[in-house]
Structure formats: structure tokens, C-alpha cells
Length: 214
Ligand code: SAM
Image (tube, rainbow, N blue to C red; front, side, top):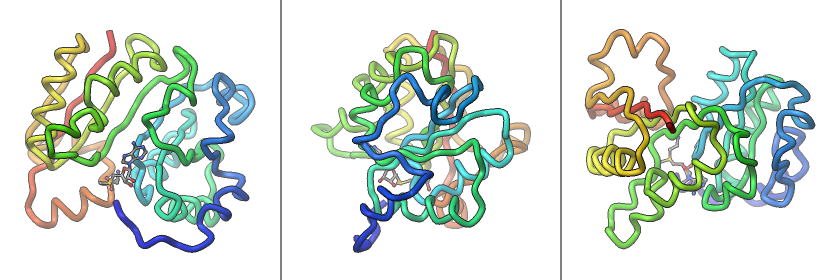
């Protein structure tokens, strides 16, 4: 998501009580010092404008959530949502997820959400895809065994790549659909993201998978 650069966005984020920047990572201390309670920690990588993570956090007060986004101008949108209607169980991190191992200890994270991640269509950029073997190896260093990763995208090539890469990494695929909107059971708890709303309106099919790190 490329938003126009918003002057002062970096500084505003640095002053916000809802946002942690790449220089303020609380590795190993999110539960004890940031949320101040021992509840499961679920993260979304590439939160965009934050419709998904803010709704999820409001619906599930017993879970701690962190939304991770690399662009200040984008993260500012979520920060403003939090400023208007803050939920205690949601904090935001501005960082590139390439460095995610700087942010969390082994076993610190209980679930990862990826929604409409950038496809990086060129082969030479495959390592940048958030479901590449490199990223899965990073996730293994922060996730508890038995934890899940949930991924939605309308991009079939990226989805097929992700299914393969997850299988090759030895994770268990629990659920795969190539048309989420034809699955009534899964749709009951579905929270559409900003991109999802746009793509479903255009008639695109939404793919979803749920995998477990075993
Ligand atoms: N998840 C949102 C949605 O579904 O509406 C936004 C989707 S947008 C295509 C992808 C988002 O992921 C962008 O906001 C982008 O800045 C962010 N992003 C991409 N790569 C990232 C990375 N390595 N670390 C953190 N954020 C990233």
C-alpha cells in the first residue's frame, strides 16, 4: 500500500502511546510490560489502514494484539483509529517485518495473520514474500509450536506459492479455500480487510489458508 507521504508522520508516531517504533521494540516484554497481563499474543504483519486488526481486537478483549506496518503514513491511519476509540489490547509497531526476530523472543507469539500481502511477482523478489521460506523460518523463531498462521489474498499466484512453501517448510495445512465467500461456515467470523472489501466488490475470488507450525 503506497500512500502519499504525510509530512510529520514519523514524528507523530514516535509521540503516540499506541505505537512502538523499530527503536523501541519490547522483545520478550510485550506481555509483561506493554499489555501487563499474560494473555495470548496475536500479530498481524502488514496491517495497512488497520480495519482488520482494530475490529479483531475489539471483538476479542482477552487476546493481546500487535499490528505491524512498515510505512509511517499508513500506520498513522491505524493510530488515529486508536486515538479516537482506543482498545487496551491493541498496540502497533512500525517496522519492516524482515527484522521480526528483533521484536519477539522464541515462543512469544501465539498466532500470525497475513492479509493481502504484497505479491512481489518477480522471481528474483520471491524471498520478500511474507510466506517465503525465509519468512517462515523467521516465524518459527517467534511462534509457539502448535500455533497458527492465517493468510488471505486474492492473488492466486501468491497463494499457490504460499501453499507450496508452507508444505515444504513442514507446517500442517489445516484449511485451504480458493473461494472464501462460498464457505458460509468460515465467513461467520470473517473480518474483511480494506483490500478485501475492494477486491470482492470487483468480483475477485478470495483465497484463504490456515496452517499450523508443528
Ligand atoms: N492488510 C491490509 C489489507 O488487507 O487491506 C493491507 C494490504 S497492503 C497490499 C500490504 C501492506 O503490508 C502495506 O501496508 C505494506 O506497507 C505492508 N507491508 C508490506 N511488506 C511489509 C513488511 N515487510 N513489513 C511490514 N509491513 C509490510
